Image (cartoon, rainbow, N blue to C red; front, side, top):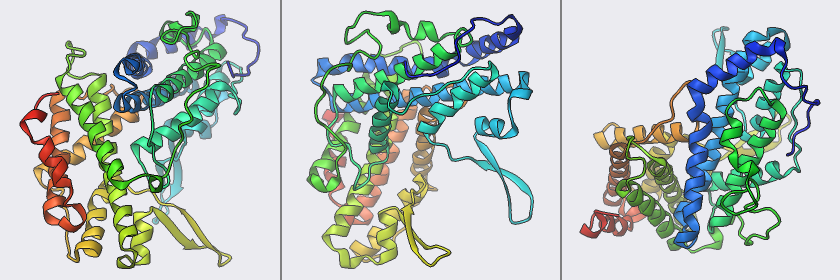
Length: 434
């Protein structure tokens, strides 16, 4: 299934301690491995019945990629335990990678740790390779294998949904893209399980579809195998009408929110797959609105913006290298910086006024808390329970986002005044229930 390994010698009696470690981690952290994948499958099952619903398709992609991240966190946790049991097989660099940190010297000459930048594509190869290292095996995921190619396309789609940009936008999405996302995760996890068998407890039951017939709702990797999908690809916002982007993003989020708040999914818990998907779409919508409005206003009146403002709104960094050459790179900003700085820039350049958003208010704090919760859904850590996202937490985040846009519509009407149309619809009596 895309992995290359030393012939599996089966269970090694000398490695019973590793089996014990895997069992202990399985008992403690099985939710990391299973819940997001289960949720993505369940949402995928419903999409075709709703006419390839765009919001649910995006939700399935998001939860499938969240499943990939949570499984990598789970596997990294096991690998760290393996490193303790087999220290002679691991270097300090290996352990630091699994912890996701690196060392540097600060301004005072002290050795400090900072978060290490790791891409998902890189982690897909490195984490299982380090697990296999403890067993004297090798894992490799060929770049042209089915799980690698499907996952590469899925990650690009995920990024376009979560953090849309002017030149990277997911305009069309449906069942096919969602199915390919679930296929990609299942195929990848199966390749890891095959390499590490029998030292990866819990994956055979979780990937029960591997033995199923070739049916769209059962066979692992067969939902899209040998079939020609629709020719939908990542587009640019320039290819579309600004109004269409703003409306579709708003109503995708509103549909998912109403569905989550009104649905009885998982009645025995405080949250569900729907509330988790809804909070991610909610903040993806906020990011999309800011990106689209910024580009709209810049293209509408480019002379109103200076170079620094244009670079900031386009998330581009420019500098001078040691050889005097000018370099350019992406400069992705934090959520807090974007929600504060973009309105400030647009207020100055479009409305001709100074303005600063107040994130110290109750709604501002709720806005930031909701984004932290959204981040915990998408980026899991070993030993940390998956957030349930209660209906109360989702509702609080929705109200915070609406309060944020209401403030902008009233305070910066030149740039954001049109948002009142959306806000009035959200506040109407018919919008009270999904």
